[in-house]
Image 1 (spheres, rainbow, N blue to C red):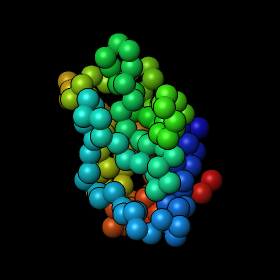
Image 2 (cartoon, rainbow, N blue to C red):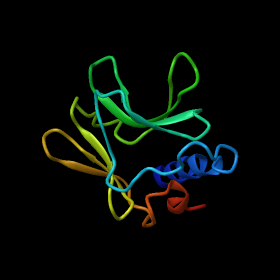
Image 3 (tube, rainbow, N blue to C red):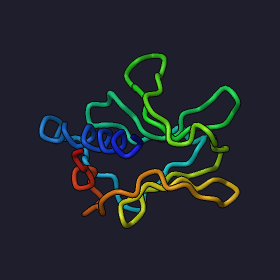
Length: 128
């Protein structure tokens, strides 16, 4: 189920490339997001975002949410049972995997899919 949702997310990010060519379509391999930084990777339409979703407890979920509405609505989460602390990172690895690294050094592989080429979400997309 998680692979299907991540694949959907990757396809969603890449599907608008032709319509929004002025927006950079690539997220470079090795790029990362830090919990608490308010950074995220947005879809080309800006309807969705991927990153750390803050919880009332001060912890964070790695997830996908609707980003254009005033109250962000979480669509999917990778670590619902083990929220991350501020300073944890999610990284797009060189082989094209998404890895969550907690501040204590433990890791969780979020997406182990196909290898990426040139860091493009378009190249990572797998249709199921």
